[in-house]
Image (tube, rainbow, N blue to C red; front, side, top):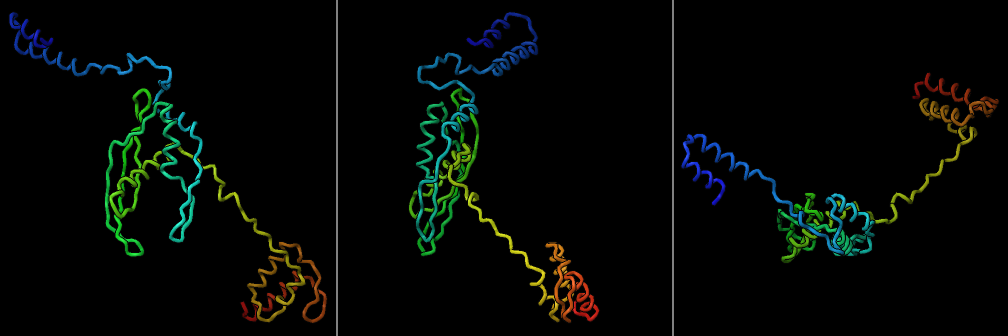
Length: 262
């Protein structure tokens, strides 16, 4: 007989009011429902090969420390495209033994899939599958991390869903594990752009004296000469006299501006 039933039976011989009896029964029922759940690890005794009983985030960190990196050793070469990648099998084969050693389980708990019929560029019929997978990473103590990834795949038969889920698993392990490739960074190869050689003042002479050179271009030439410290260089002007480069540009520029050649 339950405690509630026992109290109800004993109360039958007492002169308690009905409301008082109901209150007592309700209080006992609430206490039974709010009692803490038993700890599944209370009687656990670790074996020789069992993982350390650490929180899931610590266990996952240890997995990441052991994996270190997965290089892009596989190559796709088809349809005029070629690139290196990390395949699903390579990633799972790397993470599988390490997660086992640290007592970590990776479990899919929900898969939402969408499908679409499509065709290739050659007209072959294909079915596209896109999945959103909810995952639980379970640590050795039973606590969890909840994550979600997506994957998509094309297939001409019945393998699209499995392929898409495999892609979602690869994304989970590589992104959740922040798994580097240790490949050479494309930005490591950098072409240094050489500086254009500085023009001498004499090389500007034909452009300065040419009647079609605008006043705006002459102002630019004056700026370039100032940047290269050549405003004081003596040059032979259009009438055969020696004149400093900066003075010549200013003089001709004023003449061009007055004449309306901007």
